Image 1: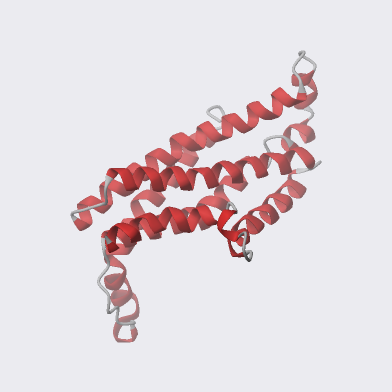
Image 2: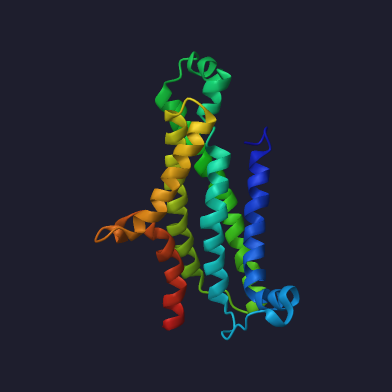
Amino acid sequence: MIRTKKLFILIGIFALLGMVSPLLTRYMSEILTISMGPTAPIMTLKPVWSDSWIRFYGNLTQMGGIVIILFFMSCVSGEKQNRTIELTLSKNLSPTSFILAKCLAAILSMLVVFILSVLLCYVYTYYLFGYAGELRDITVSAILFFLFIIILICFTVFASTLASSTAISAILSFVAYVLLLLSAYLPKIGYFMPGKLISISTGVFKDEIVT
């Protein structure tokens, strides 16, 4: 991750999402007015700090999820194509250890990146709105969402393990990603599916506003 500069690119992308989300939330009406003029829609509700977190996790779900797939979809299939996996496994390393190491490295990398993006979102939200939520709620929300990231990474690595090429790995990963998102809407069992973690993580802030 460090040698190929992937880690630093990930940090840059997720740091940008952490900074941009509060800015877009606070100044969206001004941006629309400048870009569209008199035809700009009138926003009746003034944005609040919780909208910043909801937009942040929404951006992570959409753009962040795609970035995670693009960065890790070739972690095993790429080594198959380059035949470097044969050299690695010939050093008395089991395939299970090899795949688990790949998965763990991806999770730890994303943990660092995710924590940074959450901190940036908190700082910008606090600066723009004067309040960014209780630390307890922010922590719970972040843990819930990172569980979804872990599941997505595991599915991506699994798809990369099954696939014989990066293209096939990409298709399998994106299919798994869509199914994870749709799993929240399954009748009766949707609440217990991984996709529900996203709405629960943002629901923490809505509950705080109500109380």
